[in-house]
Amino acid sequence: MKDGPFGRSLLLLDGDLVVRDGRLAEVAGVDNLLQALELRVLTPYGSDEFNVSYGLDVTEAFTRAHSARSVREVLKLNLVRTLVTDPRVVDVRQITFDESDEARHLRNQSVRVELDTVAEQPATLVVTLGV
Image (cartoon, rainbow, N blue to C red; front, side, top):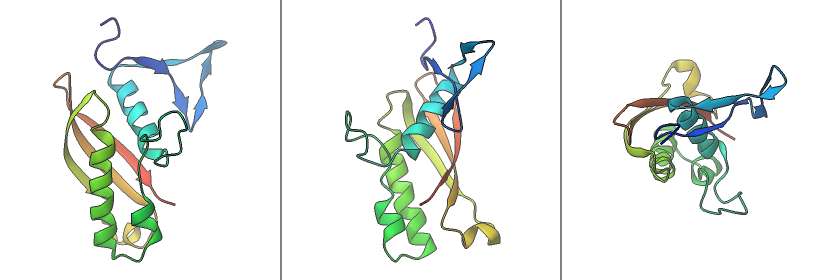
């Protein structure tokens, strides 16, 4: 593969395309994989009209009464389901939530996901989930 197993795409910064020297900036390699996974996770499940099975389903976690522990468990299950649908991800090794006192009282959940990839190169996705 010309761009390796992780491919190449346009670089996004806070959801916007990046222009450098009058050209659209690109991202490649593991950074492209992480950008694609972040987009997948931050897209509400079923909201892509061309691929209704794309995105992360947080409805159960954030719209029903659950303990903080239950919310994290539901999010973990849905993160695994979502991330392994990308063919570049072989396995989700570990999911860790920010368990600081400050973070425990927020509706947003900061999460770190350790991944195994098709290139046998580990990758780490850090993202904030919430409503």
